Amino acid sequence: MNYTLPLEMLYRWEKERADEIYLSQPIDGKIHEWSWKETSKQVRKMASYLKDNLPENSKIGILSKNCAHWIMSDLAIMMAGHISVPLYPNLSAEALKSILDHSQTKFLFVGKLDDFNIMKSGIDDDIKCITYPFYSQNYEIWDDVIEGIDPISENVTRDQSELATIIYTSGTTGDPKGVMHKFFNFGFATVNAVNAVKLNKESFFSYLPLSHIAERLLVEMGSLYTGGKISFAESLDTFAKNLADASPSVFLGVPRIWTKFQQGVIAKLGARKLNFLLSVPIISSIIKKKIKSNLGLSNAKNIFTGAAPTPESLIYWFKKLDIHIQEAYAMTENCCYSHVTLNDAIKVGSVGKNLPLCDVKLSSENEILIKHKALMDGYYKSEELTNETIKDGWLHTGDVGEIDAEGYLKITGRVKDIFKTTKGEYISPSTIEMKLSEDNNIEQVCIVGRGLTQPIALITLSLQAEKLNKIELKEYFEISLNSFNKNLANYEKISQIVVLKTEWTVENNFLTPSMKIKRNTIESAYSKRYPEWESSLEKVIFVD
Image (cartoon, rainbow, N blue to C red):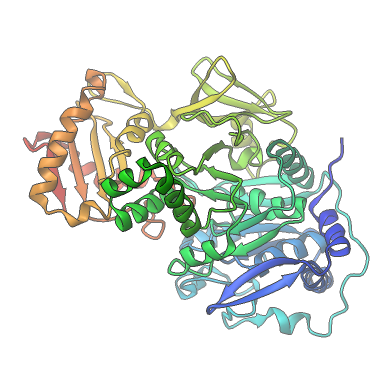
């Protein structure tokens, strides 16, 4: 079966909704907008330039934070007959060079970036670069490049089997891998997901990296296949205002975003006051509407979370505000098509049921296996690794899970994250981390214990906890630890909580660009101190 492809959707909307706004972007506080007709004109002109100046099927990189021209670049690459290589906008120079070399990219769009000077040395001199309007990086500017160029007039089509993109994974362990997807995969995944979730002419808010499969499928492809609108965030400082102004009908937030939202509401109202106001029937309705409006979620009909585990307590907390969060589960290798919780069938603690035409089963070790027609074509230049990941048509996800009698999937850990203590007991850290992260004084947590007698919890503090002094925190965490351990098996009990001063961020390489913790990096940074901490009599240890 053939599916409608992204370019075909662009051609449809440039004709049917020519003057409707497609892309809306705040720049220096001013909103810039592009209609479907204007977007298509830009795409057709840039595609003409790319087609005339590059060999067929060239690899073209996109290095930029989310913006209107990111979308235009991607569509222009498709129309010109080339292959896109989206790049995270916060890569180190070394990581950038590695991906550009591996993918054989010789042409690069360089756009909205926080500090391009740090990355620039990763771009070889023989790579041709073009920069976006508003974000000049001392290369030829998009507008100047396409000035006077005749746009491609015909509606170019790409074959369903052609390679569309190479997406480099964010890499929780090891080096990023180049996941290859053909155009069919985009069509299959988006058409079936849009129908299952019942999306129609939606409005989207784009802030998570478009180089990540989730944002690209939900926002870019979702907008193309529903004829919807994309509004962008300008910066971290303006995020709240941008989201409130956009008031999207579809919103995806990673767990840390939901935690930040929760902390913001509690900081403004106070937990006790909020609980009291929500207990008064008439006032409760007003408060809920006010909070949803301030968060920019008044019009949101589908509110998703994914990329990392979300504590159940957080989902229940938002449910009290009539904000019903739908967990989703997928990965780059299956084109972000696997499991989604539908808004009328939320089962907290699960990531929903498998989507139509997607098969799922568990291996004898309870590893989640996925099969459908849009699995990756393989890892670029790595046939051996591809064959290790896809066996007999089944994608081995590396995640461990459970499927209940109703078909709901629960993720319980990662195969590679499971470690063994000196007692010979195997521990799945993510299950313990999920429970511990429900503590409002904890911002981030990583359970470690390989080679130790008992696990240790490495944590960073929430903004709320940072207001307390060390004596108060020490007392709090000692009591909390004793209470928490009562619900764990003896071999799982946490011996100590180590409070780290350094926050884990994407910039310091402790988090992936999709906000997952990098266990290898954390182990490398702190493992030498495990014996010292384990031998200490202190239950709570502060590390500068």
